[in-house]
Image (cartoon, rainbow over all chains, first blue to last red; front, side, top):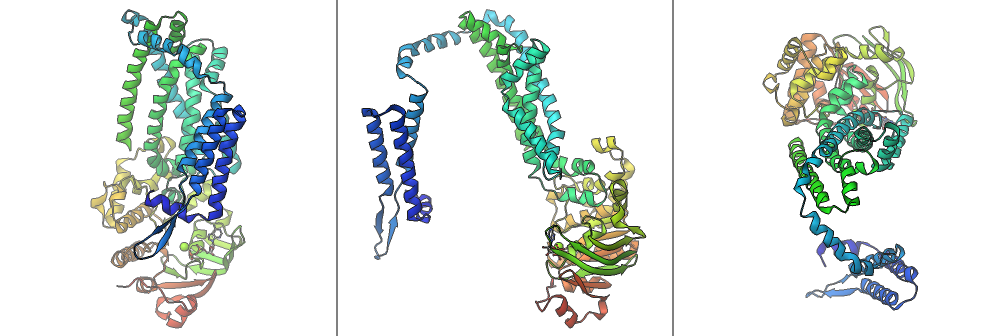
Length: 322
Length: 252
Ligand SMILES: Nc1ncnc2c1ncn2[C@@H]1O[C@H](COP(=O)(O)OP(=O)(O)O)[C@@H](O)[C@H]1O
Ligand SMILES: [Mg+2]
């Protein structure tokens, strides 16, 4: 046991330790038994959990040569491991996860995988246009979404905006926006604006806006407000103070978030076609429908290359910014 | 002229920051405000530029009733009052000259602020302000690469660049070593004498106050307990201001 851990454990009172161990053991045993009833397997699990709990409670007295001694507290890592195992088993049973299906049908996966890894290069010309659509959607969506996010995040920062009501109204709106899955937004956008890349772009704008706003207002709240205070003291308006005193501090963070959003969006954009929002997703859906896994392989290869290029460029730029 | 008449300040949580302050400060005075931490020094000087609202009495500066100001009028009023902070309050990621230029922002049109477009004339003026405090050579260096004393000088240059008639300084040398503290105090004195700017300094170190300022205001628990020329400050008076605690000095 490491020096560090022993200190942590020794700091706790015996009662606190006992409660912790009993609680963990109880949850573990409950998971094991409640999910599948009393079967040999669940009894073994429960028994192991009990053993781990006893192990966690076992203390040892360490004697030094000069006669001093110290009590080494029990080690609960085994118990934590058992608890995790109990929970995994319980959730597997409750979701109807059947290992036998995996065994029976699993080889199919390799059949498909083998075909995907032999991309049909003749199919490439058909991939170009949707691929460009996907890139356009994600770049345009990221730029517009992130631009809109900047003023909104300022309004949602408690250190700049002193009106609590406005801040919280703003945050709740952002929270609602973030709750909507991108696919759902894309579906709605496709219903409203018709099928195609415009719907996809809208979905990405909304998604980027929600995420970047949240990350930004959290960063804005951690900046040093000294310069802002100084600007206000000599008669600058709130906007002027923010722009001159806070912007230089948050600009690198902001740009880095924008690039990060772009990285996420290129992958998100690829799947939007599934709900009719244009781009590669449409193609993927179609290829899978035709069981043309070699065509699918081509689509994925193209996507992979683009994602790789964008991620590498973005990571390089972000490193430069920090 | 700054005039306090029966000024009170009660904070929203009930703390009495100032009570019954009566003061008249003429243009061009160099005033030290001394007192224990928590005595109300910051509160007193921050009421002058309305960073803090007074809750009773009347405060007038050059005939303007400070509490009657709001919005644009208040921002215009603040243009002529400079403020120096203990922690400098600079944009540390920006160069010295950028910080000095920032005090011109309130007078600029929206689009110029947005682009950060300063004219050659403005830049020259900022450089002159930096020269006045002796750090022209640091103009294009980022502030986070400057020493504390140099940063405080940048903030002094920023304030000079707004052509103030009053400078309020809230413990400007508290974070500096004794030698640098003396240099910065000397800067204040020179600015006060050469440009006839009223300077009010909150200061913790009595020796510095006595060495550079012409008038001392001692406050204790929000009340003025001494107000007079530096020469007549005695040990008894200091004892009263500091309530018998050891009188803090900067040394050197
Ligand atoms: N924003 C505030 N809200 C409530 N009380 C405050 C606030 N600011 C200062 N005070 C109180 O007012 C008193 C004077 O504070 P301050 O003017 O900062 O003293 P000094 O600058 O002399 O150290 C102190 O008791 C302090 O706790
Ligand atoms: Mg103070």
